[in-house]
Image (cartoon, rainbow, N blue to C red; front, side, top):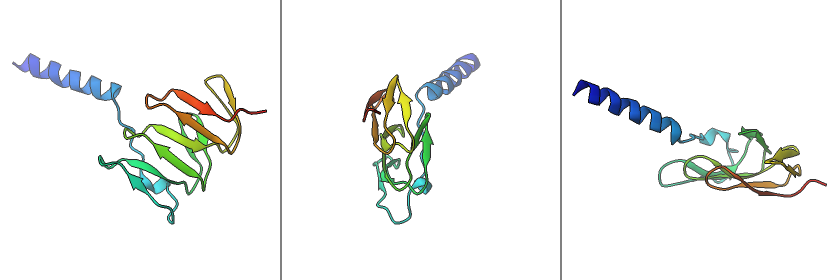
Length: 110
């Protein structure tokens, strides 16, 4: 029975690493902005108070940002030009991602 318990805890621990939830705190939001949450309590959207970096994407301050319910970045406006999945994306314009984190779209840099 003890071995079963150890294996069970190890399995739960490994799965929690694979199916992680990205906790984004509302302190990234501008104090005057409307802050929207999902029913699970995770941040859905707001206006950023400062630039915010998520997975090599630098999101622009004072612009809207949105997340999926698991905390993955859904959309923001780029603070700087960036190359995302081989696509050259334009500064100050939106970049979008699918729920699994894959790049969806952006405004192409000239």
